[in-house]
Each structure stands twice: as C-alpha cells, then as structure tokens.
Length: 350
Image (tube, rainbow, N blue to C red; front, side):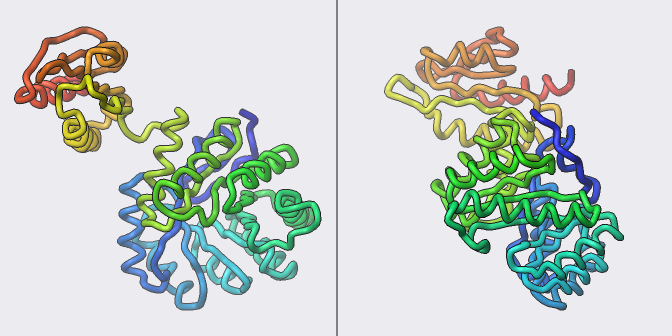
C-alpha cells in the first residue's frame, strides 16, 4: 500500500501509517447540543472515531463549544455555501473543516484555508457528483478535475493538510474516480458512497465501493452513508474494515448457514452466543482478538472449529467443544453454553 501524506484530526491520524479510521455524521440539528452529545456518545460506543456536524447557521456554531467540552471525539464542521460559518466554526474549536468547493466561492475557499492554516487544522475537500458541473468527459473526469483545481488552490497558498473525497451514489463511478485521484495526488482519501440509501442494498453499495478500494490499498478514512442511525453507519464501517483484515473491533465469529444436515437449533444458538460473546469482549478486551466458530454439523463443523481459537460443532442434539484445535468433550444443548463461556473466560486469563 502506497503511503499518503498524514494529517491530524484531534488525536486521530489520517494517512501515512495510521489505521483506516471510522467516521460518521450526527443526524440531529447541531443547535440541539444535548441531543448531539448523546448521539456522539452512542457513536463512540459503536466504534466511531471522528464525528462530523452540519453547520447551517450561527445557532449551530454556538453549540459547537458546548459539544466540544462534553465529548472526547474529534469534531468536523460540515460547511456549504457560507464561508463565514466555516471561519466561526474554526474559532469555536473544531478539529477539521469539510468544505464543498463546488458551492463556495474561490475567495471564500481562500479565507477558510488561511484560517485553517493559522489554527493548524486540516481541511477536507469534499466533492459530490451532485454539486459539480458535469462536462462532456462525464462524471468521473468532471469530479476528478474539480478536485485537482481545488488541490491546486490549496497548494498555491502553501497549504497541504488536505483530505480528499470524491463521492457519487454509484459504485462504479465512485471507484473509478478514487482510482484516478489516487494516481494523481498523494493526499489521504476519505472514502464513501453518497446517498446510498438504506437496508441491505444501501449496505451492499457501501461495502462494495469502500471495500474494493480498500482492498486495492486506496483510502485512509471511511464514512458509510445510510438513511439510518449514525451508530448503524459506524457498525457497518467497522464490519467492512474487519472483513478485509484492516482493523479488529470484535471477535471473528464464524457460523455456518444451516442446511438439512443440522440437528441443533443453530440460528437460535448463534444469536444467543454472539450477543454474549460481544458482551464478554467488552469486559475482557483480549477476546476481540479471538476467532470463534459456531458450526451446525459434522461436514465442515469440526474442521472450522479446530482452526478457530475456540469453537463448537453440532451433532445430534449435542455439541463438540474445541479449544486451540483440540477437542475438549461433547456436551448436551443444556450444558454447552456454560462450558463454552467458562472456557472463553479462561482464555483471557492467560
């Protein structure tokens, strides 16, 4: 993976050797400070590391100071149209500014960049396909060229603490745009599919667009966009990063899809065990580095269970328990939960 420049957002590094960070955006009016603070705390519990706030007016700016004092996560001000709000957000203490160069004048951009330089905070040049002028070259060429123009503006001013994003609602266009900008500059990239929707389809668009780019070594921070809570966005982002082996947020839980060979109520067992495993991992942090297999039958079950740190494989109304590839014993449905979690806790005790 090619190293990019590195910028610092509060205490989080983006780019360079830093791990890919997870961010999201609050979904209540920033002027409602207490609601924002509560939402940010839930975001942090879900694994969010950077939070962006919409800044639409002076009431939003006035809330930033209160929010900043009440949370530990770095805050980004999201600025459109009005560069003065960007200046005021910087004065209020945000850790980074996101601007859309397509809806702020060049003079306004210069004013924000100068203020960011003075405060030593980074700026994300956040371009969206819906905001740019589409030329005959198509969406991808248009958004990349617009980004390069904005980058030149920053560089001409001697400002290099830049993060770039080129978002569209379409997976293929977004991937093509990021591949192209990755070849043309060395700034950290913020990945995302804008306006991806909700549910399985929204998650699939995010997972494919973000996942393909990350698998190619492209991208330094991610925001999953869903018409759902910010916590769900964060959970989805963490899942993408863990599935690619880039970060570890929780134990790796392997379970089979179930077929006619299964003679145990695996779906119910997986739901119950997963909830309890995640609860244990918060209490015993070492558990997050384990691989756990919960398998339903004797075809793939024993093999997967042996390869995991700890696993169970179902038989006829019984489970075999494996620890570090060694079978410990077989247990009835009634007893497997107690034995499994007793062994899981022992593994964290050394």
